[in-house]
Image (cartoon, rainbow, N blue to C red):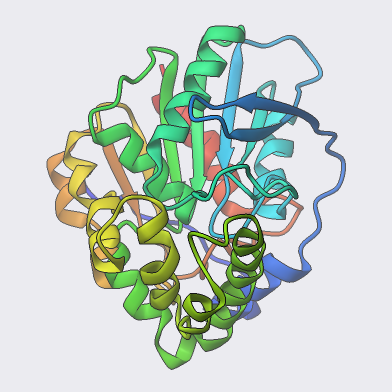
Length: 321
């Protein structure tokens, strides 16, 4: 599908990618949504917490929202989607990936950009135990990569899944890693690393035989974290092996349901490969929209509804038949 022309035009301040990213991550508030938590047990003995919110009327439609790196189901970019969809007659379930719900998960492993086995179990749970006939997925950043990889790598896709929207997606993880290590992203990278290290130190207390203080002291950069922990805990050889095997980019050609990728040109986290124009041109199910502005998950539009939220609802109404 050819490139979609974007009509996103934010207020002047939000044309700055860093301003829109920081405002949307640290300042934005979303009110008027009530969530109910459900814990599901995974086949490997771990758990994932799901936070549900509901339309005012009975519905057979559901949006599954998946957060990004070190996010959770209460982040404004997640609850903003849930609120808008609830207001438009669609239930929402916001996923907390392993260790992201406020409680450390049981196993040494955790979540990562390519852990589609967890999404398979979440979708199996929803389609087996719930009433929904029309299901959509909206993934952000890491969660966007996870959603795209899930759809394209050959998993059994339930017939109820009608569309996917992936926002600010680092679909080429190696390139995104290189961007995050540049000076322009120093503050973001430091913040991510601080959160990740805090969790890893908790892991070290529970699993001292698998990781020690010396290992943790070697972590200076985000790539170091992936070398020391992410790759070893999840069966990859090293960080580079992880980036290669967890990226969604090689799987985009195989996506068979309507899918929108919304990546801002001024997103400082994304490398050129994260704008997959050739892949979109060759796959009639893949729609690619590249606004000039929006930063990383920062598509401010006023009136409490962000541009990406409005586009997700429009895309579903236009394509999920």
